[in-house]
Image (cartoon, rainbow, N blue to C red; front, side, top):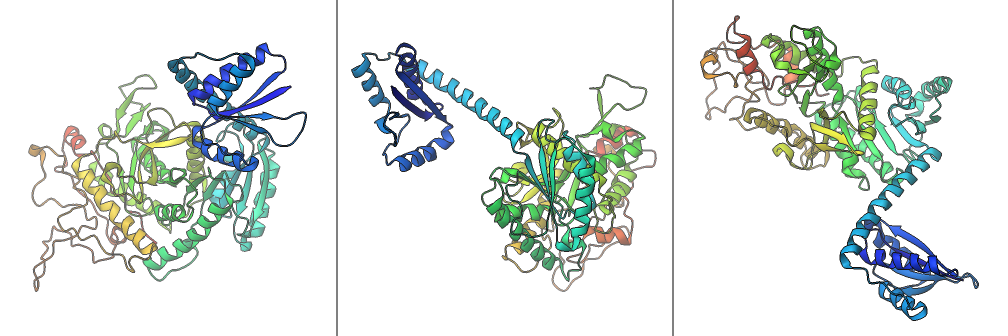
Amino acid sequence: MAKFVLAGKADCPYFAKAELLADYLQINLPNFKIHKITQHPDKWKQWLHDICEKNGWKHKHSPIVWRELLDRGGKGLLLGGFNDFMEHAQHYYGITSDMLSEQMLRIGAENLNTHIEIEKEEEYLKSLINPLQVWISSASAPACYNLIPLLASGEVFGMATEISIHLLDSNHYKEILQGIVMEAQDLAFPLLRSVSVHTELDDAFLQADVVILLDDILLQHEIPSLEDCIRQVTEQCKVYGSLMDKNANSTVKVIVSGKTFVNLRALMIMTFALSIDPQNIIAMAMFLESAAKAMLARKLNMHSAGIKDVIIWGNISGRSYIDLSKAKVYRYDSAIWGPPSFSRHLLDMIYDGNWVRSEFASVLSLLSSREHHCLGISPAHVIATVLRYWYQDSPPGEIVSMGILSEGQFCTPEGIFFSMPVRFQDGGWEVITETEINEETQETLKYLTHDLIQEKKVALGEISEMCPYKETAFIDFDMLALLEEENAPPDDLETLSNGLLQPKAPEGEKVQTTADETEAPPNGLLQSEILEEEKVQVPIDDAETSSEGLNQSETSLSMAENKNP
């Protein structure tokens, strides 16, 4: 019996032609058997190198054909490539193929699609046998306690995917972790294969498919300076990143959450875990997004689920900008009613400009501060929601804010993690680059990148101290810039004290401020610190300003500066 093995790239036209000829021979010759192997084009080169090295062959192109010596044992006998197989078929069997090039290319494309579908089916079948490995760091945090039931319910990864959860924390919290394990086992979730405790770093993230970093190490210690905080965060991320690089699966998905240097931690994990695709590392901004939606819903006396498309820009745990210009309201109980898909612009529904510009921003800043106590329900929910979107796609047309590695979108510098609007689909995410932003928002984004760049330079040892923003011509964001000319505020209208930088005075002189002007903070003083000292308000032009004029002024609303540790 003659058994041949035909292997090639899934989209190779010559493989397609050889495959049809081999199928014809197998159907018409009882002693001719063919075994076909296809490889994805991205994996073909490495696979061919390995098979040739194993058998001592030399071959460089697709396809490759060899004969299995079933009656003798031992390694196969290399026949050669496409031309060698065609000559062999013509010489021994008197058969050849006259397939046209166009048909070869078409069949090659069909083979590639079939190969991809088969790979997906195999991965699905493997997932039924091998559970998804989920690692959670700082597992003693309240968010982990609330997260486990959400992950094990099947709604996040799918009702056919079993999971194993690994709880990672220091030995000091071992009893807490063991208590969590016992309660998780009591739940008896069908899809929860196992829950285990890990207190040693050597085996951390072993075979991890999903890593959730809840670390907020700076909440437990007092650090002398901001730069020392950054260096401590960098050291921890260096350890974690190296372990992920060594132990985790190459396709691992990493979610960075918490309240301290979320963007920076994601960047440092990417820096020290070189084998992980940067697209698989994200920083959580949805906690702030959900808090903003909840505040707006309370103001409108409606359900927060009816508010969509609130965008968080910038540094999630630092200087961030809450953009309501695209926000929509669904199912609002008013005189105007429509089907579930009917929406109205949120800015058309809020008439209290002072509340939006002062209380809204300051309260959200406090929610993200270190001192704000959180029971972990909201962080757990948003983490589970993002994972569900990642594995099962986000709702069509809905904007999700996420900290991702910038590639220059919206004119932001490359190489930093920056929160921006994204959508999840097909197991990945993409930036919604078609989002339109005005000049004022663009200038705000420019300002927001400054701290992230400074944090990165301190972390990498390029500078020893962070420098304040020095472009004196820039003002964070003029809340009233979008008022029409006839509705413009008077010259003496108070402006938002948002950490604005005053122009430099000539040497020997001091810039004077009027009673109505807000003096610039000293270098290094953050806006969140100013807000603690005095509540800042921006009155609108007139107490009886029409709703129309207000709506025109509220395109990009809130600069929520979260407090740095």
